[in-house]
Length: 330
Image (tube, rainbow, N blue to C red; front, side):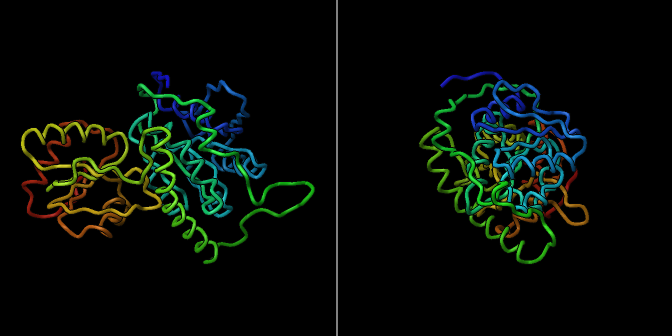
C-alpha cells in the first residue's frame, strides 16, 4: 500500500476517486472547494448554498454518486432520503438535528477513510441518509496511506436507488409536508445506521487494518479522569495524556468519532472534561448528549479553534482540583 503527503482536501479528492464519485458540487460559501480532480467526474460550481443542494438532489436522483462541499442545511436531503456525502469546514455539530450522519475524523487518514465509509453506510437500503465529514484543518498536510480502486470496489458497491429519475417510469419527487411519519422513518434509519456501523466495522478492519467505529477509547480502562473530545484536537489531547500517564496520573481519552447516530457511551470515571461546542441558550452539545450516559462529575469546556498541549494541561489541573462542575469558555 503506497502513501503520500496530502492535505485534508487532498484526502477527500483521493477518497472520491476511490469511491468512483460521479458528481462534485462546489458550494460558493466554501473556501475549500475540491478543485483538483484527476479522475472522470462532473464538477459544478453552484451560485448559492441553496442551489448547491438543488444540484446535489438532481444528480443523486439520476443515480450518480454525489459529493457536496460545505453544507449548512441537509434537511432536504434527509427528508428525500438521498445519501449525498458532504464536507463541513465549520461547526458540524449544528447539523445534529438535520437527519445527517456526522463523522468527526481526527486526521487526514481518517478523513479519507470516512468518505468511503460514509458512502457505504448511507447508501445501504436500510439507511439512505446524507452524511457530512468534519474537516477542521483542511490545509494541513499529513502522511496518508492510499488504497487502490479495486480494493475499495469490494467494500463499496455501485450506487443503487429504489426511486430515481427515469423517463420511462415518471415519478414526482420532493417533500410536501413535514409530519411525524417522515421523522419516524428517519429515526429508524439512524438506528439502522448505528447497528450497521458495527457490522461494517468488522469488515473494514479486516480489509484495511484500521478501525471503523463510533468511538475510540484511549487509556480509559482504569482512568479516573477522562477527556471527551472530537476532531483534530484529540491528537493533541492524546499526547498530553501520554505525558500525564508517565507522571502517574490515571487519565484517558474518549473520542467521539461519529456523533450521529449518537453512540452507546460507557464511562466509569471519577471526573470528566468535555471539549465542546455550545448550543446557544442551552449548554454544550456533547455535554448534553453525554449526560444521557454518565451521571458523575462532568465539566464543560467550550472551544472554537485549535487547542495546544498547555490548554489540555490546564484543563486537567482545573478538573483535578475542582470540587464543583463548571462551564468554561476557552
